[in-house]
Length: 269
Image 1 (cartoon, rainbow, N blue to C red):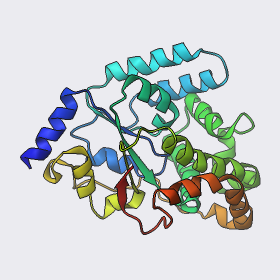
Image 2: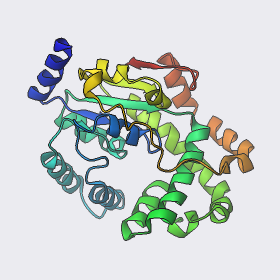
Image 3: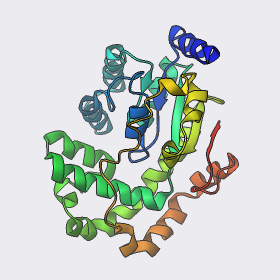
Image 4: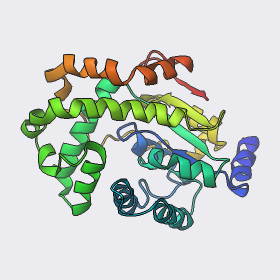
């Protein structure tokens, strides 16, 4: 146990930061709960970062202005763990400025991920209300043709399903290829996202924090459980698009020894 504490404090002293770089709906909330005594709030500066990323995508601000916002965000953080679902968008910035960083990369099968993501958007808007920045978040993922009104209930989502299935497949694939092809060797814990509900000893091994210093009691509380199987209504279209857009991602995972989404556990890559 002493060795693990020493590893953790060496990381803190040497400015080694840990970043979650998974997609939304890959148990980031659960990881934040497990690390809650060692990290800032889940999705720290989410609104500010999403808006700035969207403005950069549209050419309204420069790369330098975006980086200034990301640097301010880093300076405002108090802990070495950053559990935010937009970090994979900022990997170049993170690696350039913090080359010794370590990463959490959970993997979820694309079918259940797509359903969970759509249910999450619907649930969030119906239970927590709508703010202006939500429109920005939707457009950042799905493009200018879609807005909040398209995701407020099952009927509206089903109307646009044929149009957004290719986008979902592309987003899932990007979440694999752009991260694995960018991260430094031997820096990343890749794991089945649902493993957090079974065992967290691998988090301890990766971070150096003893298991009894992790917050075990509150892990895995799904605040937006999947209820509607949207993809079932267009299953053939979904898998055709998955074949079209995700072949590189699937081959990349296979090269890392991951071919069964539901049974692999974890490894460091």
